[in-house]
Image: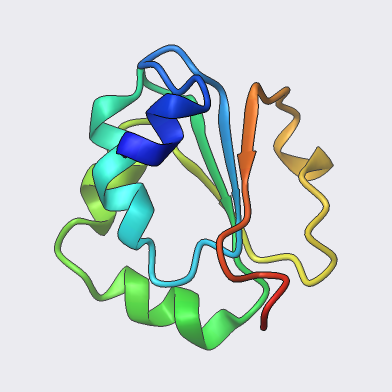
Length: 93
């Protein structure tokens, strides 16, 4: 959060996470951001299935988060614009 804040993250930031994984960052961001401002893309269905089993998954969705299981990392299906795009470890994997 500290690093993202240094790059301009505020509660009103329209945030896109490429490679959302098991939604570790989403658990922190979705409740902190204004509703509807978090979008996560995860291309591996098994990873998202693990996230669905987590108790905080409903909290993430209740905050208007959009989760896209797309392999090409294309955020257009969400129909949103973004202020900040984060891709931690996507390029290294």
